[in-house]
Length: 156
View (cartoon, rainbow, N blue to C red):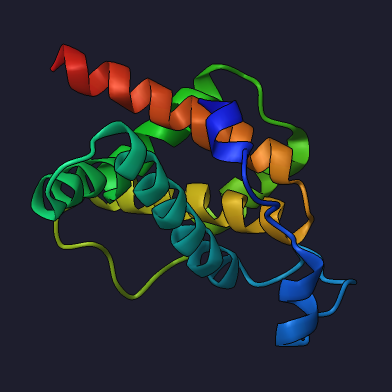
């Protein structure tokens, strides 16, 4: 699946950066919630791409699948899985913890506060990897997470 998600386009095409006037010197040293905002959009895009190719059919069916993979409890499950594998770097764990521990005024209606905070940390990690142009690592973590969720969903 990692190869499927990587094929076709770069995460950082030069024309994209030029056309939007983005600086090549961007880094991941942004506020945690900004990283989470970016990571949320990235993860949603990757899941939509995955669903389109693995669950073709009507839009309602694809959207139901997407919602199960993108919700806060699913993202929290992914983060727990990634932490349990002990494969995250110190920097990745620091980005995750900083975002997870951020006190937010709101939370998802359909999740626990623990799931919401872990999901925020997961999204911030993705946003950080994107801004640091660590596309292969970003896709590795997304692929591991989706594969884990798919296994969990088929068992349950």
